[in-house]
Amino acid sequence: MAKKKLKEKTDKAKKITKPKKEKTVSKRSKGASKRDKSKSQREVTLLEKVKRFFRGVIHEYKQVIWPSPKDVISTSILVIVIMIGLSIYMYIVDLLSVAFIDFLKNLFTKL
Image 1 (cartoon, rainbow, N blue to C red):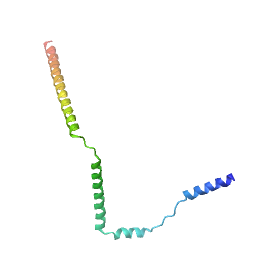
Image 2: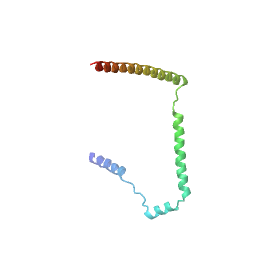
Image 3: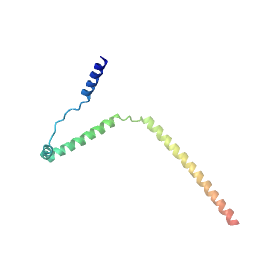
Image 4: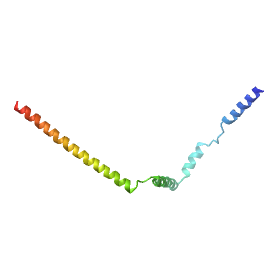
């Protein structure tokens, strides 16, 4: 009895995995159908592809979560403050490096 159940399971598996037969189309009929399409039909499909692309762009554009004006102002102020701080830091580093180079120049010219 166990062998019979096992055989039924394998038969079911074979039925599931059995590939379906596809209709064969000759190469001539494929080529003929491509030649039958006019140039305007190909342009329409290209136009449809472009339309579909821009519809997708608009759909994605609507899904964007834009920051509030308060967030934009606060982050802009933060960027400006950081830039001013870095500018001051670079100015001080430049002054110190020029002073150090002048010190070394004077030290070695006196020798």
